[in-house]
Image (tube, rainbow, N blue to C red; front, side):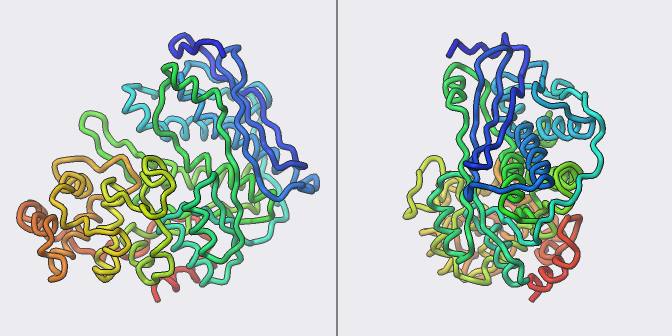
Amino acid sequence: MTAFDRDSIRVFRFVRCGFDPATGVAELAYAFDEGPELVETVTIPGAPFALDATRAAAVEQALRLLHLVAGVSYYKAAVPPQIRIDGYPIDEATAALMEQVYLNGLGEFAYRNGLDLRGRIRFPRDGAATGQAPAAGLPERALVAIGGGKDSLVSIEALRAAGVEQTVAWIGGSQLIRTCAERTGLPVLNIGRALAPALFEINRQGAYNGHIPVTAVNSAILVLAALLTGHGQVVFSNERSASYGSLIPGTGEVNHQWSKGWAFEQAFGEHVERVVAADLHYYSLLRPLSELAVARQFARSDRYDAHFSSCNRNFHILGEKPAQRWCGLCPKCHFVFLALAPFMPKPRLVRIFGRNLLDDPGQAAGYDALLEFQDHKPFECVGEGRESRAAMEQLAGRAEWREDALVARYAREIRPQLDPAELAIEPLLQAGGEHRVPAALWERVSAHFAA
């Protein structure tokens, strides 16, 4: 391909999108200026798909939604001043949603690249307002996203206890996620996604790079998959603290996981019901819970102890090595160890991680960031600072933990600077706050959580 000069690019184009029911392959094409197409493919297993007129119309709307959301992976390479959609018009509400997704979902990307995207991202508005989408005749069964960590496993077991028929779904070739999914004993759906090969060459030539709202992309993929495979619910497992970002001095709040937060869930879920299918419900089952409440639920069963991992490095740096499911060095490892510690016997937790992270003085800086002590919350999907402080306070009062290096250091150096009234763990374990879980289901699920 021709040389990529990000600073000379003026237009990002959504060129076309298409879906072949015979193969289950969706094609998403993008371009910069009048340059060559960048083509991404998403493959939904189960083809050929027979679609009646209503379902086919819903699939077309879901495909366009995916095209728009997934474009963020390519737009970010140059963040040009103009956005063009060649194949179809979008209305005011859709354009506003996309601007929200791109601006907030690229918050960490913009911060790290020294960019100000406010006022820069504008989607064209040239379509008539969309009326309410009809129902697509979908059954109530759930398509549940699984990521290999504790949260989705808590959702899966809660839905199982509530008697909800479900299929466990993931995107990409992770063997670790597959092992977890198979461990559930439920039907599975492994969706393929191949980024445009040229994107990697563009990155080598100096494109902007960084974090994208991957949960938004995965949400759009699962909405399409749910229509094709006959699921009326798309279920994620994002808890309450996902809505809170890192407070950066001089910058304000930057949320690494914005598309896991309530603002995205609410806007995206409403859009799906308005534009795609009235009977396709998108929600996070764990939204009313804190990270600590989720950890408490996970600790109730050891079914997944030898299979799960929330360590992001497991998927990137270490590669797929099941013997090293936890690197023990990243913010996710630090936080999950701390969050589980109040609810799990110490020998079981140490056995899961292969070592005691809280007895390693070398990990002090990582835990300081989690506690928001002389540092801001890490750019990772971890709980709020108050959750980490409450968990550490619990351990400081327990004989089996208080001698460990970092717990002793907390009690000695950090606790004296904190307000004791804000260290209680009990308020953080109460379910509460806004959510989109259907009322009858939440009644059953919350009873399971409280049992």
